[in-house]
Amino acid sequence: MAATLDIGLIGAGAIARGMYVGAARALASSAVRLVAIADAVPEKAEALAAEAGATAYADHRALLAHPGLAAVVVATTIGTHAELALAALRAGKHVLVQKPMATSLAEADQLIAEAERRHLVLQCEPPHVMHPYADQVRQDIAAGRIGQPCLVVSRSAHAGPPDRPWFYFQEHGGSVIFDMGVHALTWVLGVAGPAARVTAVYTRSVEERLINNAPLRPDIVDNALLTLQMRNGALASIITNYCTVAQLSPALEVYGSQGTILVNAPQAGYMRFSSGGVLERPGAGDAAMHWEIPTRTTGHQALPGSISGGREFSSPRLTSLGHFVDCIRTGTPPIPSGTLARHSLEIMVKAAEAAATGQTQELETTF
Ligand SMILES: NC(=O)c1ccc[n+]([C@@H]2O[C@H](COP(=O)([O-])OP(=O)(O)OC[C@H]3O[C@@H](n4cnc5c(N)ncnc54)[C@H](O)[C@@H]3O)[C@@H](O)[C@H]2O)c1
Image 1 (cartoon, helix red, strand yellow):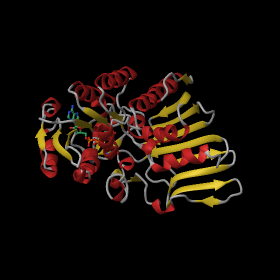
Image 2 (cartoon, helix red, strand yellow):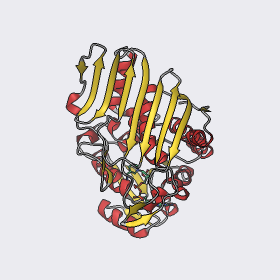
Image 3 (tube, rainbow, N blue to C red):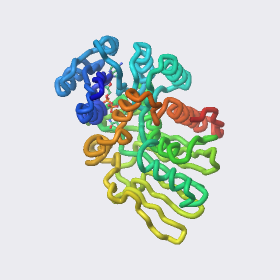
């Protein structure tokens, strides 16, 4: 049996409850313990800690001083990720941070440097790059099954969180691109590799929303289209918004000169069409492995069999926390790495510049 690994959770909100508490419970048999939970709202920390059998803290500094704590998950509002992840690394803890890892490239560089200097694992959400479907697309492309990759289309959209106002304000890091677009972007990067340039169009389509049944006027963009030229020569299109009540499109479409791949299509996990129109469905038994669907009432929710619960906890490649624990124990670099997340962040930051100026932006980072 491996030595016990004690983990803390900073942030006791929806994703902490919906994903990490369950993931930690599922890893209990491999000696992972969720021992501490902090939230700036003490009652939230206390309620979740009581459910999880952990100690509650009202402040992340107190959590970082928890005896024997080895690693931390940062699952707070977007604007706080960099500061909290840096504090955890400086306290000598391995870090798994929600997306995006930071809101500026300077902060991302600082996190990567701090983790390297201290030989700590820095893993960044979202994990699509290590999803078996991403593996399958990369294998199909490498084996020439769809010819030359020409166009990748990915979308991540829902109607917008119905109950937490911070998502709609820039001062908290609110951004449909940081919150949702990053999923589509990570799929694209995961199957097509790094991008060379980006252009984008942004708008706010819904000026007033009902959040917690009260009118709210967001200051964020809620509807964005990004176009990327990938370093492999393909084009990519990323569609993201808080304006999608329902949709029937696959999460990822890959068009090659001799075939098409559709990933997370409704009712079909993975579809590959050859140029003769022949359909193959590798892993068809996994058709229920959608990660998110939009719903009117919750904004988005995980389907049964998604990353938030079920059989896939048996594989570390199928949960962020499982992979994180694996990397800490084996000293292997995480697949959703800091450098990948920094490239994704550069694209999102430069997409905003492109949208504001109308000028395509060259990208400098890679992974
Ligand atoms: N909810 C989802 O389904 C979902 C899915 C994927 C990713 N995410 C991401 O997870 C992150 C959190 O989202 P959420 O939906 O859980 O939000 P949430 O509002 O439900 O929870 C965020 C929590 O962070 C706490 N917090 C804020 N600043 C803090 C600080 N300095 N110290 C300690 N706690 C602090 C808040 O009090 C709140 O309880 C975001 O980056 C979001 O994009 C959410």
